[in-house]
Amino acid sequence: MTSIDIENMIKEFIAFLQIEKGYSVNTTGAYKRDLLEFKTHGLTSIGISRFVQSLSKRGFAASSIMRKTAAVKSFCHFLLSEGRIDSDPSQDILLPKIPKKLPKALSMSDASALAEFSVKRDKFSIRDRAMIEILYGCGLRASELVDLDINAVNFDSGFLKCFGKGGKERIVPVGESALFTLQQYFKIARPRFLKKKQNNALFLDRCGDRLTRQGLWLIIKKHVKETGVRQSASPHTLRHSFATHLLEGGADLRSVQEMLGHANISTTQIYTSVSKERLKKIYKESHPRA
Image 1 (tube, rainbow, N blue to C red):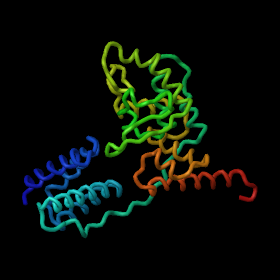
Image 2: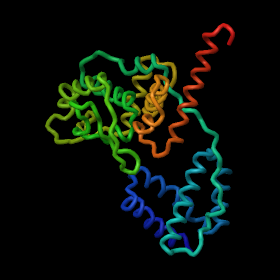
Image 3: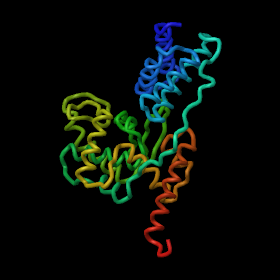
Image 4: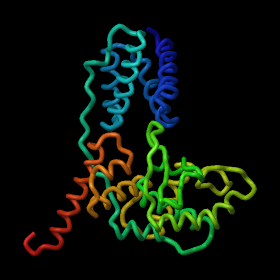
């Protein structure tokens, strides 16, 4: 089987992920890049093994190797189910084990400082504060936040509707502080960004277009620096902080799982370790016999 044949089958697989599975453009794009990188090694167990070995030799992190290997295995499963191959060449290929890294969460004081960074009334400050309040107050992913439309928030009920991985819908409660800043954004800032344009996106850039993930990341980085938050922070750091602070406040794991949109509770359980680590730190700093 030539690399051209494999490339054509990759196109079929990507179309399957987009149409049948409903995967996002970002997810299917990652699959495509990984599989195109693999195609010259050949669709055999030896070829897949050599591909995995080459990734290790080139210094890829274990997480990247696992993702790329998982993409190849998914591709092989698809081809087998479609009758394009007689056996799965990836069945004996093991995914590398990755040591669990605890997500970094901001302290409650740093999270509050970042959320309350400004009392200015210019359109950028109002918009940025509303976005930070939603990220920290609702635990949204960056992609979920920038994908929000104007009808996503129900101010009367205090809930927000977003679409997570695989287009899965979930409803998240919105706190009073976030609702207030959103109302300010709707009334004062958004019309100034929109000008005479027509756009259903909730959060807009300076040109009145939907804000991008990269634009959001730069905005968060800017305010982290300006507020003097001690550790680096990204939109995902605020999501981690949301989950960690909920659990520290007594929220049950199932509720946090639902608000985060995790398909498997084992993904959410890592935050219990974060909370325990913080409890250890508080104990050591506070108890005379620690």
